[in-house]
Image (tube, rainbow, N blue to C red; front, side):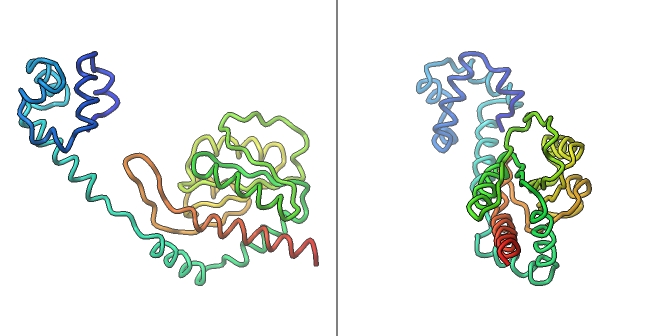
Length: 242
C-alpha cells in the first residue's frame, strides 16, 4: 500500500501520519478524521492531502483501502514444513538425486578446494555448507559478498557449489562467470533446472518445491538444500576414506 515512490514523496507531517498509521492500523480503520488529527497533532487538511498522495479521494476511501490491505495480509497462508518436506521427499524418490549426489562427490574428490556461493538465505546455506564440508575434512570457503573480487590462478582445481532458489540472481550469475573463467567447475543447486544458473553450470541439482513469497521476500524452504549438501558431504567422506 505504501510504495517506495509514495513514501519518498512524504513531507515531515506525512511521516508523522505514516508512522502512527503503521503502528495503529487496526485502530485507524475505525477512527474519524478528527480523531486521527487529534492523535497525531496534525490538521484534517494535512490528513486529506496525505490521502491524496495515496490516490484516495478522501479519508473514508483511505480507510477502505487500509482495511482491504490488512485483510489481504491476514490471509497469507504458508504451507506447513511437514507438507513441504513430504513434497520434496516424494520427488526425491522419483528423481535421480542419488546419481547427482554421487557425481558431485566424485568431482569434489578430485579437487583441492570447494567454494560455496550464495547471497541472502542462500548465503546462509553457503556458510553452512562450507562449515559442514570442512568438518568432514574437505577444505571449503564461502562467498556471500556479491562484489567479491575473483582474480586468482588457484581455482583450476576447485569446485564451486552455487546456491540460488530462483536460479536467476544476477550477482550470482556474474560470480559464476568469473569463477568459470578462472577454471572452477560449477555445480549449482536450484529449485528448478529451467533457469540461467542451471544452464551455465557444469552440473545442476534441482529440488523442485513450491516457491513462497511474502511481499518481495522469498521464504521458500531451505530444507532440500540442507539435505543435498549433507548428502554430498557424507558421500565425499566415504570416497576419501574407502
